[in-house]
Amino acid sequence: MTRNYSGLEPLGWSRWFTQRAAQHSLQTFARVAAVDRQQLLMIDDSGTYRAKLSGSYLYQSEGRDMPCVGDWVSVERQPGDDFAMVQGLLQRKTALRRRAVGVTGEEQLIAANIDCVFIVQSCHYDFNPKRLQRYVVMVADGGAEARVVLTKTDLVSAETLAEQLAELDRLGLAVPPLTVSSVTGEGIARLESSLLAGQTYCFVGSSGVGKSTLVNRLLGRARLDTAAVSASGEGRHTTVRRELVMLDSGAMVIDNPGMREFGIVAAEESIEAGFADIGRLAAACRYRDCGHNGEPGCAIALALESGELSREQWENYQKLRGEAEFFHMTHAERRRKDRDFGKMIKTVKKNLRR
Image 1 (cartoon, rainbow, N blue to C red):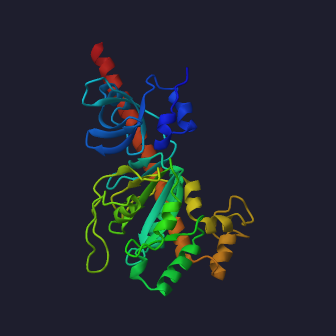
Image 2: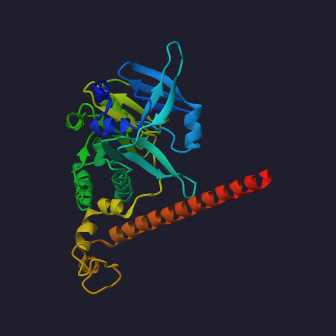
């Protein structure tokens, strides 16, 4: 008998998850709202409560694929227990990930099961199209929709804002950027109207661009900590953990600690999605396998020569592709070494038993 999960739909559950829930022995599911060291804050149709990872889950996962904010997990909750026990992790529909800082061949999961990611940049000192494209590539690789939000429009002139929007327009974004000011309220209603009940949204960007302030405006109250702006007009980093919060409209949002630097782990097609202008030009090359290195009829070369494609944009595209290729190469090498080490341990144990 198929369980009715309609009570979880306001929290982001859909038929997609129902189809995969049958693979789990436990049919009680909850969503991860926050992760605090070894504890998880869970939310389901009964409310919020704490949970821990069961020993069997830790053993089977071998310390990998730990639940993150936005995940759906199967839980066992006994009457009178202070904590529920997480027994399984439901397959993720989408994921937001980056290369872990300072670690070669490793990736860090940021959030899961997000419908749309808002990439937030300040119009003041944070505006950086190159970094924005990194975010677009990261979002595309995880399968979510990417939207761009420019904040602090009250700190720049109308002329500067128009120039920035024109620069972003040349990037070929799928959806025009939203411009907002948490001080004047400009654009807040437009942003709020785009958030749909039962959908999950994530806000990412550098520290101090106003993500938490923006989420607080959407909440209508000071739920997330913020700090006073500096003398330059830029905010200070305040968010220290990721947390899923519910808006009065029924939409869910995840605020994130600032990420000024992050490495690309995306596949080639995800990088193409972040550079729509280059993808459009490459499709016009004479040869399908054109390497864009001076081959006859190369549309990229012609665009660079005519100025239709800027040299800076092309170099940024090549840099991100190189990073992604290096990550996947080192990741594959690390996995190969792990397999070889595992085989060696098995051989040693076998010889000791003789």
